[in-house]
Amino acid sequence: MTVSIVLMPPKQPTSTSTPKTRHEPRQRRWPIEIALFAAMLLVYQGSRALVIGDEGKALRNAIEVIDLEKIFGLHFEASIQGWMLENLHVTQVLNQFYIWAHLPVTALFFVWLYRRRRAAYPFVRNAFFLANILALAVLVFCPGQPPRMMTGEGFVDTLSLISGIDLHGGNFSGWFNPYAAVPSMHFAYSLMVGVVIALLSKNLVLRVAALMYPALVFVTIVGTANHYVVDAMAGAVVLSAAFAITWFATRRAAAYRMRRTDPAVAESQS
Image (tube, rainbow, N blue to C red; front, side, top):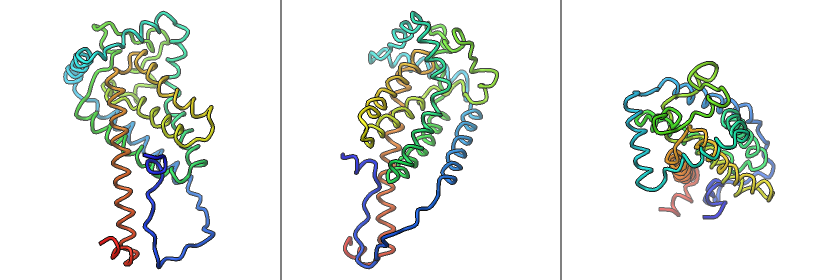
């Protein structure tokens, strides 16, 4: 698919009866957009905190994830974490990156998209919202303990051990569900940022940096023992499904509106 097909809103059928205005006033919608994102963040994070899940089920699911990875040769978290534990200065940086970069980078991405690629913004925003809804649904039915809680498998909680960051207590406890390993929305967000910027930006440096971002996030979430490899893959699947559903719904909605407002178009499509 071309960039315009994937990220731009679908073209409206040509109308023969509705004249086009040459100068339409630009509405200042950014306060509304900020309110939408703030509401989504509060609902999503609040729901994650409330829907903790059963500890026993979360443990069983985590064991099944590990077994699945071993079957398909995806259980290489220990290799990434081993390298990080041999380079503690890198681990310190990535620990802070895990905590502080996730939401600010995503917010800056949407600011860039809104200001520089306004036509693609509504579609990406809607797909992003839907991805979070799908992720929450998966979380409700499939809680899972992250690697940092599976110490018996040899994983190390680098956030706690090396940087003294406790996700289960203090200021961060209310924002982290201990059993929200799958899907990894850390990786899903980064994949969205990387792919959309790479497709829409004309700046080569920015495009390369954008493509490196999900790779960096992947190393971070796995190396800090916050997610399994399968969690990242599940995040990519959830994101892809959300974009596909949003694209289909957008096309259907546009066609429906045109049929209602332009009888000539409706007759030509019948």
